[in-house]
Amino acid sequence: MTTTTQPPKGAAKAAAATGDFFDTRIGAAKLVKEFARKVFPDHWSFMLGEIALYSFIVLLLTGTFLTMFFVPSMTEVHYPEDALPTTMRGLEMSEAFASTLHLSFHVRGGLLMRQIHHWAALLFMAAIVTHMMRVFFTGAFRKPRELNWIVGFTLLILGLLAGFTGYSLPDDVLSGNGLRIADGVAKAIPILGSYVSFALFGGEFPGHDIIPRLFTAHILLVPGMILALVAVHLILVVVHKHTQYPGPGRTNSNVVGYPLFPVYMAKAGGFFFVVFGALAIMGATLSINNVWNYGPYDPSPVSAGAQPDWYMLFLEGSLRLMPGWEFVVLGYTVPMNILVPGVVIPGILFTALAAYPFIEAYASGDKREHHLLDRPRNVPTRTGVGVAILTAFIILAAAGSNDLIATHFGLSINAITWAFRVLFLAGPFIAFIITKRLCLALQRRDRDLVLHGHETGRVVRFASGEYIEVHQPLSDEERWVLVSFDPHKPLPEPTATNARGVARPGYKALRRRSKLSHFFFADRVDPVTPSELAAAQAHHAHGDHEVADHEVTEGESTKAELESSRS
Image (cartoon, rainbow, N blue to C red; front, side):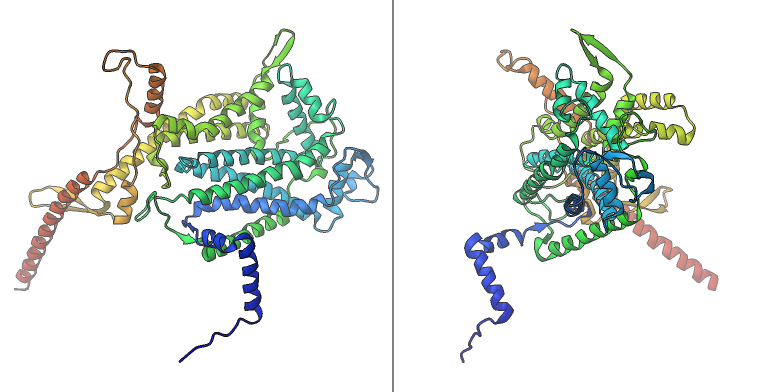
């Protein structure tokens, strides 16, 4: 018996022809085979990076709409007498501000798009920061992902730049004050400051060129670099394969999860619309950046209670905390009250964040590849350093609202400023110590849990008078998570001379590296070894046997008492 295969018809034929077209020209079959079956682990924390990506897509969509109506010009015009809002009628303003008002009140859906765009920018930065926190605390930046960490860090800086350039475009009082701060920071640079300011603003502040330049950077230069780095970031994720949390069957040589197609394609598509829908609801119901309340930019007024978006608050707080120190060197004034908070402190914090993977790798001497993530408690020093850096940023961000805190709580703004100064100097160190102690305490708790199991609250007394608490053993999966990590040990202290008594080359550098390694890894709690676990299980088995004998004896006594009472 022979069977005949019918040729494809209709849609099937068209799909086959399309697939053959792309396969013969770009090798689509190989791409699909490589990427469609790519396995990704399933954990909620991996969605943080997706939120950043989807927020950026929303920014591109809404930004395209806004670009069609915004006029990036500082030409002075008078707002029409018959246009909304009524408070702006007849006022002199730049075309940038006038077009922002027109977009908000006279373009159908314009205000909605503006607000979705602004909320998406805030969510974009929040998702990037939270995603980098997850990567940092779980050690996902280790070899071979150091380059991807630098890419992500650069995306963070570009996100700050994109937010600043977009925030300044409406040319209102609030954004104008932000540009004035940027001008002050530029001029604070010794010797080169005035030249940098003139080059940036095209003359004396505010000039006539800054809005068109910011517009070009905001819609072309910065998004282009972000798109390029997002592509690099995703390619590196595929090349290095995805990290995963420790668990049974998960090793550095495999990935346990679901394929990209169809599982994650469906999840990702649905999650994009969830993010888009949430941003649309926020844009429709939560008002933000109502520029008509501030008015067009005028260098003379500076409103109280004016704060930038949350991701720039740390810079505002840094400027508010610094005392008014300055000195003159060779006829040049060095304004420490601007240079230190505007350049030095952010530079130190961001440099420490960018360089941390290389510092830790240098201290550990570890050259292995790592695809299993750390539990933050198992690396107490790294977790403490991360919390310390976050504490510094949070204190600076809170200090950026010191005037609002003073007015809302009826406190002295000078006292609040001094309190934040003390907190900024002492807070990160206190946060580091507390976090490290908590991590070590949690490690000891995990160790006890592996050796003894879960407490049941049931206490048994033996005939000898001894009391013991009955414990419930851990499951294999629970035990695996608690013991499957490799704690780093500090590098040994080098000797000044070698075995032949000759001075060791590079002794001072080796000694510095050893001290750094001891700082990172000296305080640790080693996981339970198989021999320790076997001894503990044997001990508990003996105790369980005694408990069982006790329960049998107790049951027989109870039975005898019942029979005696019946007789």
